[in-house]
Amino acid sequence: MAGRPASLSAREEGSFAYITIKDRTPQILTKAIDTLHRHKSEFFEKHGERGVEAEKKAISLLSKLRNELQTDKPIVPLVEKFVDTDIWNQYLEYQQSLLNESDGKPRWFYSPWLFVECYMYRRLHEAIIQSPPIDDFDVFKESKDQNFFESQESVIALCTHLQALASAVEGLDENQLKNEFFKLLQISLWGNRCDLSLSGGETSSQKTNIINSLEDLKPFILVNDLERLWSLLTKCKKTREKVPVTRVDIVLDNSGFELVTDLVLADFLLSSKLATEIHFYGKMIPWFVSDTTVRDFNWLIEQVKRSDHKWMSKCGTDWENYIKTGRWVYHDHIFWTLPHEFCAMSQVAPDLYAELQKAHLILFKGDLNYRKLTGDRKWEFTVSFHQALSGFHPAPLCSIRTLKAEVQVGLQPGQGERLAASEPGWLTCGKYGIFQFDGPL
Ligand code: F6P
Ligand code: MG
Picture 1 (cartoon, rainbow, N blue to C red):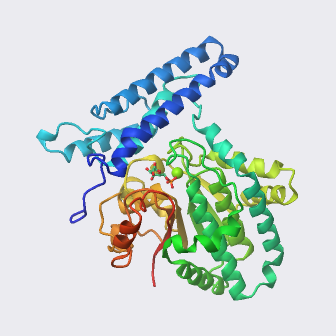
Picture 2: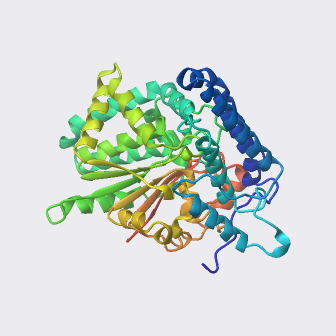
Picture 3: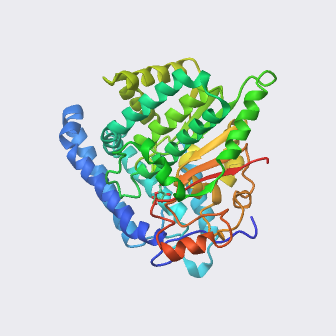
């Protein structure tokens, strides 16, 4: 597409992309290697000597990967056959085609950051699938589960809040309902601070009751299109007799506490009748440390259900029922773990694009989704979100994201500059958030 700014890249020393590739990704790989080491005896118990050999193989592949990255070697094609191998290798060729002869091959510190960072996680997956019988081991599973357990108190508080709300919801007037809707959306936004890739895989859980902090956090919401979400969904509710289904799709991000906030929101959307059906999208392979896979999704609901806490376990039972009765639907698609910008979705994954077109509203959770929505490019802060989406408009959509990468559009003139002057790390520290909507007025 002509006229779009350049991609962010680790080429620029000191940029966040540079620091990520130089420091954080090797740290994540080292942690993955440690995790494999620690599970050695478990692999032995399960698979005998073959398990130990597989652990050694996976570790050596990951050490090799870390070395390639740290010495800025060319990006090499994937070798192990998997559903997406050909698409990845074609994409690598495409990256090569963008370079001049003097540039050489796509490299870690040279190519677009979005591409190389996604490639790192895909290579990590390749190392695991090349190492049977431990080829379905998720090196991030432990950290994701730990994040959930460490957030227990917050989870209980949220589930209790949700159940109280569910029993009162019929009696709420319009204003009260709107207030509750906004509250749960803000909880889901701040839940996105709990991702584990920003912290290099270190724990990042929600230890305090987030509901009590919402007022204090409001000044950190840089773009707030909540009113537009409200007017869209209330319009759908009012025309329910003509159009009986209102479908909200949630493109999930992190497992653990953030996933709980998303499920709580999804539950409320049903009980308030703002929606009648929720569709979730997760990742098919372990991704950016904490992203939700189907295993994480099912595991978390099971944990919530099995809790000793009355309201927490009620949530788990309700959630399981929503799935059984089809009011909640979980989808997998390989596109979410490809390196492509979302504006390529209609070409690369037309079936997924068609699925998203069925939604009345799509919520995109998290930072990586925002990077893919905007193409991870050096946009001016004041460029409109609609323009940065570069033709990606399957349905009205909203990004719910805390800022952890140097890309932000749709700000007021001067807003970005003022923030940069007072707080140099504002784009990447995860302290600020947005609700950024694109759809009909
Ligand atoms: O900020 C570091 C980073 O790894 C980014 O590359 C990525 O966009 C983000 O973390 C992941 O955050 P989230 O879980 O919100 O998508
Ligand atoms: Mg994530």
